[in-house]
Length: 297
Figure 1 (tube, one colour):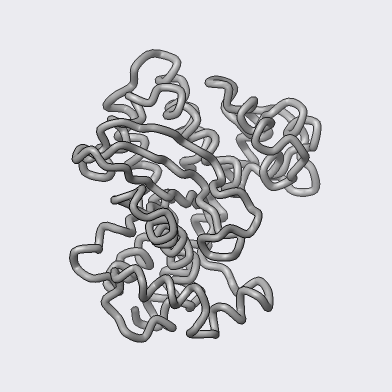
Figure 2 (cartoon, rainbow, N blue to C red):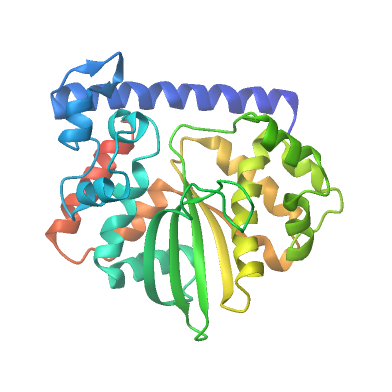
């Protein structure tokens, strides 16, 4: 990517973020009809934590949120622009009708899912795990039976306007800079990378995609031979061009037979897939909500 292309990409993403911010502010005032809390795209605690206005009202979504996170978390419950709440709105309905979910996801991954077994939001939980010895987790974890009879799982990351992020602390920085750390060891043990110099993956634009993939690779290694298949998928709106560019480039670091191990899926593609298999009017209303809620006009 040239310096000019990088600047253009940055400007496109900034413009898209402004669009989404305005869209969510308008959604708050014109659809939810509630007051803002400090920022136009943030609702008050009672409206978010008590009344669940950041979530779709059907399919027991808000009840699932309260069960998973019974304590108040501002970005999850009240920030309309941040992505923390989106996995609940997207994937709880797929869990409620797993056959619908199977059809939708098969459109995306290529038809190898025979049966969805479980869908979990934020898995593993945020305590340090044996997989990466840190708090890395999937926004959504979907375990399934493959058409070949074995078990597999999808590790899903959901973004809205977010892009890359800087290193957040000394522990993470130390692991990223230490080529003997578990990150590099798991990368080598996985056998899926084409490149010898893995330090390129610690760059801001690649690091989260790398860690999400490493979590899945670690589960394959630690829980062997339970799982035979894994794919890391990032969901993002078409307007967030950062991930289209970065994921396409990241795939080149993988051996050709593993290029599909890391994939990007736009909201628009997900919605189109849902549209094809809507089981009833309840799901039709849900899909209309998703389009209205997340796609800026």
